[in-house]
Image (cartoon, rainbow over all chains, first blue to last red; front, side, top):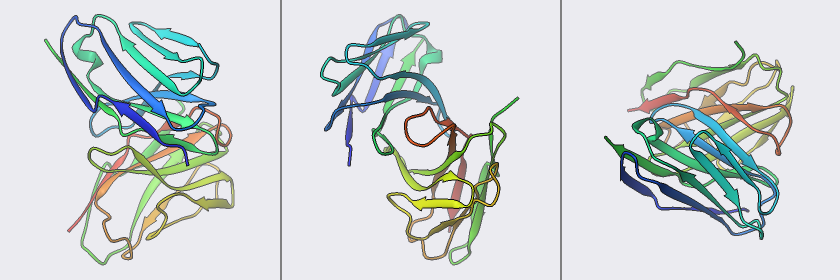
Length: 108
Length: 113
């Protein structure tokens, strides 16, 4: 089965700083999803990447999928307290499997 | 507004009791899913349904049961056979199976004592 490894497991940054979260797969990624979760709530879809080298942006969040389609990164520019939460990557091959998540704290 | 609802938000049960978690969607999605989330862990798939009247076991189905009698509804029963039922349960749906964005409900936190 597909295994996804996220790093770091947790991240604490000062407001205004940039940050990157990585998601590495043991197999080729045919569909890579990024979700955000507030503690104790459901997941909110951020972006989906399918093609090698693909990059998508939404507001201050940019996600990339590498050419080999085994690694994705999520980059937040000029972080704000509203960015705090758990970020999960998910991969869809035969079914959607998730990484363990990255807990992001943004200090004002 | 379309979406997925889960109820209740918090649920408390005594050990040995079965409990049913509700999941309803009005997105006209064919596929529905149940996940379990434990602290510090990602989501693990319990059961999924690709279409009405059909469902399949996920990675951790033991101690759980589901039904899919209506397209909109996919209730999950946590039975007394589930050894560690205390967890956060998330329901999701998608237009089709596998390669489609999944929409998630707000979750139900189940505590069994």
